Image 1: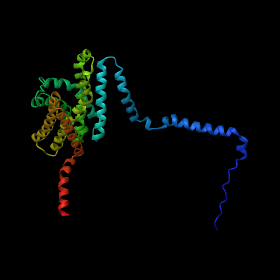
Image 2 (image 1 turned 90 degrees about the horizontal axis):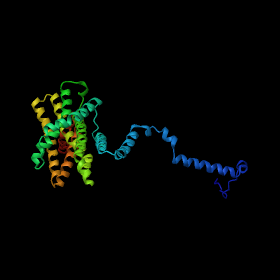
Image 3 (image 1 turned 180 degrees about the horizontal axis):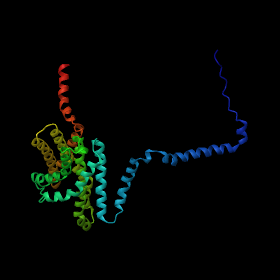
Image 4 (image 1 turned 90 degrees about the vertical axis):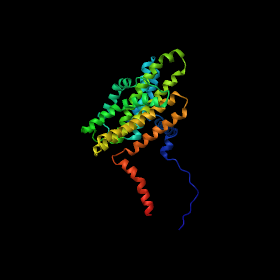
Length: 324
């Protein structure tokens, strides 16, 4: 049978609530106020949240605090070093997320970073005797080639160790070598940025104007540009080591490594020549080409068979289309 709904009945307060009177209303408001405070200042939840105690939280706090600390320095020298290291580390983290090297341990990381820091400036000082960026060919051979060769030295040390059978570098793939080049390039770029700022301190101090922008640009873009070029050259070193282990002739493998060095030197030289002239569009094109080549080699350098798979993929698609 259908039920008949009567008129809504008003809730009748219980004897306990009636006995409590206005005090119950006050307790309810107090409870709501406490919940609101806990929502705005959830101190207990913050202390119990594991994510807030992770290394990513610490990293964020460091990245936020370091620029403020650097700007508080009264001397330009420590400020320059802090910013140089800061931007190098920031680019390193971003490129690590992009490349995702799988076989780089602290040993290879420390060796490459240490060699780049200790030997980078002395070596480039010997090789780059008379830099000339007045024309593209001079820029390639007097700036691009010496600096790219200098950044490649730590990676070549790793390659020699791998060829000689050292166990902790045996599993490195071409993409791992690419990231080792990134490490060397970022360290070199940070040292060079501080060097350029040291050369411009007197000019900046005398002018009192933002001629420092030319040197601040070194912190923002110079280190990552060096990382991209060094990564490209190092990728070819990793590819040469890989193919040498498969039976490639030593001279052919060495030539393969030289191709990467030449490519990086050309990009570097054209960039410096464009920076010295009014060819702004050239710098943009070289930068884009460097980034695209770097990303492309990082993509196909994931494993020893990735490059072969990338080459064969269009052929397989064509065969499937012909059969269908």
